Image (cartoon, rainbow, N blue to C red; front, side):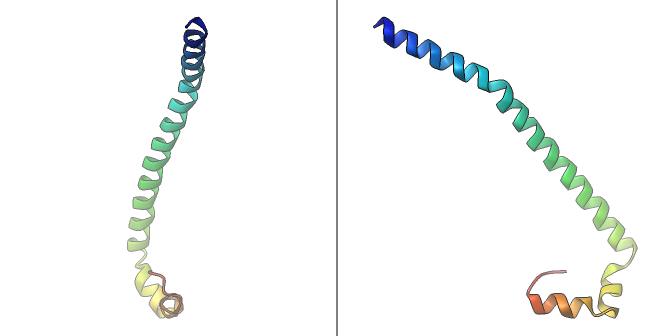
Length: 72
């Protein structure tokens, strides 16, 4: 019984040592998500302000992108 308890305590100790790294990873992941969303909004507004759709159509980019099946 003592060996089982020792293994259980050792397992919890190992989990306890992993938690800070796991928490840090989650914080970095969430921060990256919000940074990416903010950057997406900024680039989207910039492209709208530049009237990118019109420029892409005049330059023939829209036809090239449509042939690939991607969205512009």
